[in-house]
Image (cartoon, rainbow, N blue to C red; front, side):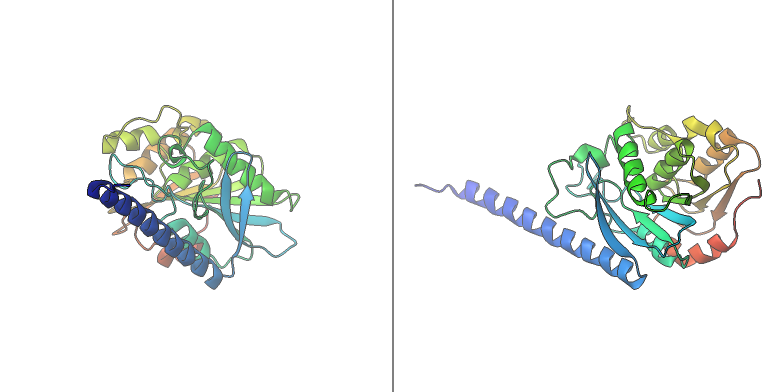
Length: 279
């Protein structure tokens, strides 16, 4: 059988790409495990009916309240036009925030298919971390993952924290659940259409956006933190959300010098200590 050099070269490049992807994935997973282990967080994979959700938790019964962290969008895109093969974050800010929280009961939820595999299961299609990352199906899967944990602790109250796109998911969950008592976001994408417009990217027709449910948050104690140097989700996003919600329960704060991917975990204990608005 004749082997053509260009075919052989292409095959070798594809094989090398797969190998490098697997190596990077393993490194990212190991980094996540190490961050969690240092904070005493125990791993769990939650299989929702749609796709798997990775979780880490530190819970000591009896559980009356639980602080829940939701990760950002992760490594969704390699470039403006090329989606990632694996959404696991290279800088897991949401996980780092959870690890920096010394509260007794903490739960961290990754976004769909982050920290899963490799290889990723067939249900982990690329649209879940690109065009459909805020779709009703994704939001429902995150809600199912949260229910999976919460059902173990009847009567528990939730304090939700979301980073970046996880801030939008956290807010959307808070708008529909009756067990959420507070909401915090860090660089939260609370106005999806506005952020897409800023970056001149393709609109996401299926995306749910927290700002469109503004009236649901009027009586919920909440704080939204923005980075003064964040050009990914700038402070204007939180200001627009505050104006849409109105009332005295919503508070915003801009942290000077912080970018979207800054070391938010380093300042997180001090931000938590400030507490929530008095509604």
